Amino acid sequence: MKHKNIILLGGSGFVGKHLAIELAQRGYNVTLPCRRPHRLNELKVLPSITVIKANIMDQAELTSICKGHDAVFNLVGILNESGKNTFRKMHIDFVKSIVKSCQTDNIKRLLHISALGANQASGGSLYLRTKGEGENLLHTFGQNKLQVTSFQPSVIFGSDDSFINRFSGILKLSKGVFPLACPGSRFSPVFIGDTVSAMADTIDDPASFSRRYPLCGPETLTLLQIVEFIKQAQQSKCKIVGLPNTLAKLQAVILQNLPGKLFTMDNYRSLQTPSTCENGVPTCTTSFSSYIKGLPHLFSRRPTYDELRKQLNGK
Ligand SMILES: NC(=O)c1ccc[n+]([C@@H]2O[C@H](COP(=O)([O-])OP(=O)(O)OC[C@H]3O[C@@H](n4cnc5c(N)ncnc54)[C@H](OP(=O)(O)O)[C@@H]3O)[C@@H](O)[C@H]2O)c1
Image 1: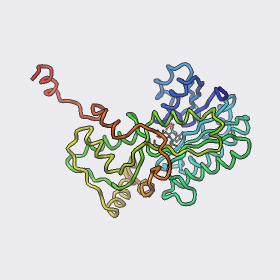
Image 2 (image 1 turned 120 degrees about the vertical axis):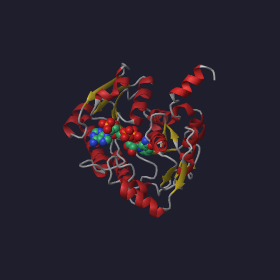
Image 3 (image 1 turned 90 degrees about the vertical axis):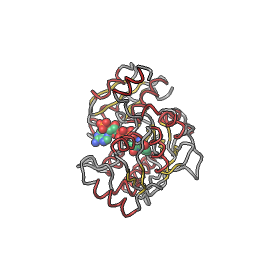
Image 4 (image 1 turned 135 degrees about the vertical axis):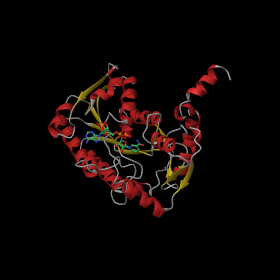
């Protein structure tokens, strides 16, 4: 194992937590710096994962905590801008900082998550353009002694994701009708287990240096189909109504000004770019529809007291 000691930046999120466990199981030592270590108690029990509190946005601190590692994995990303945390800062400037730290600390291996459809020149949204620019930057630096690999996943699903769970939560709250923006947007949802396995496979593989890997599941589904699957799994009676474009934009304009930014104009623009691997080979095998069907209990509502009592009494 050439790159035994790995530092995960952005490791406290959905993908990061799964990746940390996958790497630990494969025998890597993982350092996970984050802003709120108390939220990662489930990872702290694993002896090869070290969770530390750090401000990775500070260049000096970043360089200091990266020191002594063989590889850096960057998973930092945002879907919405907030205050000083702009797309440019998170997806481009931070990549420059990581490269600088790698150079100072003489770290030769850098892995990075971008997104499917990320494109510096023609990405449909600022999210996709900045993701594309950050990834390009990385590969440019990669030509100079740094061995770089990047991953471009479609939407990633798992029991603790923020995709299924978001729609599941909205469906539970919706009484009667759920107005869905961009129902025709296309995805090849990829399972979190397949995603982290594919990423971990490349760490010590020289064939992956300078490569960009799209990560897709085996199905291509519209957003409407995905939300219908979630609805069936939680046995919701809610009717899902696809919004026409003008109303979808109006929904984005309203929701982006409300706390939580459930949906923004930039999200709307991202959804205009297909997140699919139709022109490439799907790399991951777990199917979204089978996964959802296999986990109905996960999304179904809690039984009422009366229902439980009837079950217990065998009525
Ligand atoms: N999930 C998907 O479906 C999907 C699809 C394609 C690409 N991706 C990309 O995959 C990466 C990981 O996604 P995810 O779903 O795991 O996202 P996530 O759960 O939101 O995690 C994002 C990570 O970035 C960190 N971060 C964000 N802003 C930060 C800041 N200002 N300072 C320090 N850390 C900051 C978060 O730290 P805190 O925990 O402290 O907030 C967290 O560790 C992202 O780059 C995303 O764009 C994800």
